[in-house]
Length: 593
Image 1 (cartoon, helix red, strand yellow):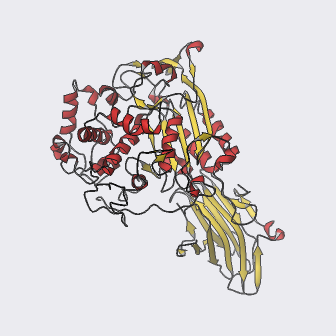
Image 2 (cartoon, rainbow, N blue to C red):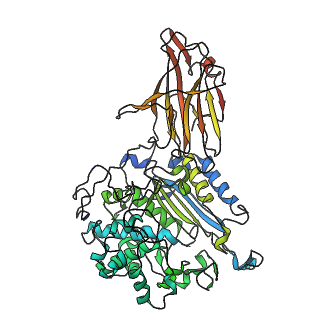
């Protein structure tokens, strides 16, 4: 497989006042439309943030409460050890931060005992609880700032997306890297292996030489492989073309304009009591013997680079990240400060990795990743995670944002695995965004359980006269391919079920045929009109069956306004109380949202 560009096109003028210097024939598809019900951004305003109620944010408060409850469960064994010692949770929509809650401890352990696999705690009086403004080592979430700085330079014409890295850094072109492009660094398709121990090199010059001499493990553009070396290399490009260090660029181009007062590399010693501790860093689990890392960058390579690196090293708090999220959802502007043009933000949220399904990636931002975005994942959703337990997710479709900052390597990295707290938080925020019924007060909702099968069955009907047709409204958003919603029918009392093909349509689009009788994945999070021709039979029963796998789920499925018509009249109408009472729901429930 090789790099492919999506269809469509954007002119340089459309990509910003100065234009993004693409340096090649790159065509981009526009982001899919997906109007968000009650989303403040839909009004055209560019909100700034303030704390407010769930109702003001257009969110359901019960699910925000559940978000906190579920997050607190991971302070205990999950499954053997706490996933994190503590966390700060922030969730919002539009200009309202509806949830900003610290849980657990920012500093709990002074060391880790590998013989007993236990944490050695500080005395209670020396432990520090989480606070709303606790500062975290963002780890790889730092990559987003490097990407933002790169796109800024593209707007200014100093950096070209399709240019070869070696055109800016001639030494980079050694060992088969002469054709790697800036885009491939930003989308992790350069061919770099995931990581090398730069910290073992004795001097800065030797660290650079190791990058220059590093050979790709795959031809550039032929595979996706997430690598810290991509953003370290991009840092070197940025510093070369601007004549400024990365920390200076961050301060002058992003944090100062946006007023991010708690976002920086190398926080001063005075910040230490407000910083979440990370790991008791010792060999063999760490590359360096450093003891408890607290107030300094955790990543060994970033530490060896003086704390300033393209892949890691930024410290921040939840509010500052929420401001960054709001800036991007606003199209690059916050208050009176603009750090990017709207078209540049769209470019960052455009999938450049269409050749590598499952590894969707914009410029720096990961896209559509259920493994940590949970039910917030859509083709438009963008974000990133950090090894220390941090994450940021933006959903432009619903204008919502989620920050989960945890110190999950405190006291040791081996205590946590997976991203269960991130997924749980994202699922709850996604559920907090209401889906209004297509008509009336309630609609049938499948739920969002994993490893589940939910069915919604109509009573047996006599369709033997022929011409029977099912009509309803349908809304679905599922984990693609893994979770499927199927329309089925039976004529033998349920011994065997067969799929029923159907057609869906929505305003402004051509009708879509579903010959398999099923839907999966993304539908725009809007209601669709459904029509299905039903088989002729004296005792035909029809049902919806929604099945999920054991890993992740989407937002689920909704069905509303079920109605079956035939040439001789209406056979079933959910709007009639007598008919509605005959619906048999297993796993589905009426939802007013």
